[in-house]
Length: 159
Image (cartoon, rainbow, N blue to C red; front, side, top):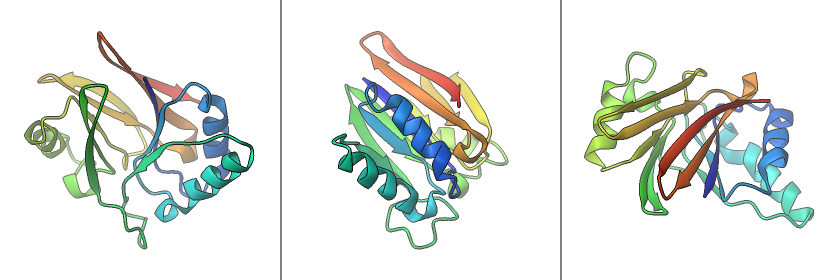
């Protein structure tokens, strides 16, 4: 199973569309980690690709710039037996350190914690938790996560 992880679009829809178009046939879920104009950026992508006969599965959270969003700031779910926590990260202080994020992921029993906000790609495996930031779509960065029978593989990517 593949996840394409996108964060911090900040209105740069050309980059988002290119990422989605590149991975629409090999991705099971697109994950948005916030700062995507309350999700409107991705709603237009969903509608565009739907008009072309392509369905997109999207899971998203609210970022600090998504002022009108009804999405929560943290979500958790299970895919293929792996517990995943997603957040933008601003409420967990990720620009200062990852201690609070890691503690929250551990408290929720997460195997994988995805966050954005810093605009910098980051990966660490600590205490049996994969901590991954895909970077910012507005700067041409995103991430891929493969959930395999053998474990999780987090891959930074760039347009």
